[in-house]
Image (cartoon, rainbow, N blue to C red; front, side, top):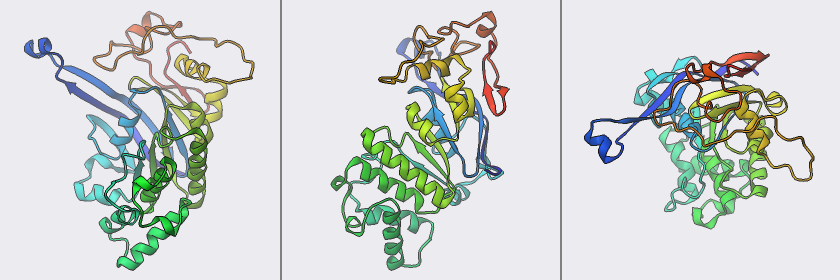
Length: 325
């Protein structure tokens, strides 16, 4: 591992909602705090798994880093450069460094384009090849990297399975030789057996090209398989970060404990979880002050309702945001 390739500091994304008719008449607007002051880093060559329930802000974080949506505030630095100061032309150039693999392989590929047309497009945009012959050779090379062959180059997306489509999406991301690849739940729409194949492909490509990954997922087994470090997110906040082994064997935050306790382990006897959460997940729409988990946490105190906990180190490289740990 080397210096930080990506550093995110105090990143915030709030959406203003119109609300219902009564709220609009009264002139009141609600705020959805999708990402609310999060900070993390990823070292070059490392995989950070970003995990949490649906709606916690994981995918929004990935889109903020690529500036597909603009943050409300904060800093995003890639190799020491602040992305939020970049012009449109500078961001286009930077997209050769950062690529995104989307969740749904059925929606992320243009059904009207052949695989050749899909994979040659980034080569054209960034002027990476001299002519059509060199582009075709590069496309064939990309297909080979992801386990597909020459016979696939002139087919359309509907002629492929979900796993094959995701391989094509990965090939498209690799076309510009990126350093950082953000996987936004890239295996969640696939069958379990196919998930394993795609995860192994990600690992092989990382070893071959020294790639850095931000791997977004809600499936803990996926995160454990591919990550070096893990960041656990709950309702717009990162509540725990640490090495993957520490997170899975010595979780500290009550929410992390509850996530791990919910993972089914057939035929394996294990003690009941030490902590269980009651009630509903907090809403990111105008959340109350203090800890977002307070209404569900058995450890909650009065302080939890008034003061938002900050991440603090409880072990080497292991950070937890909880007043009672």
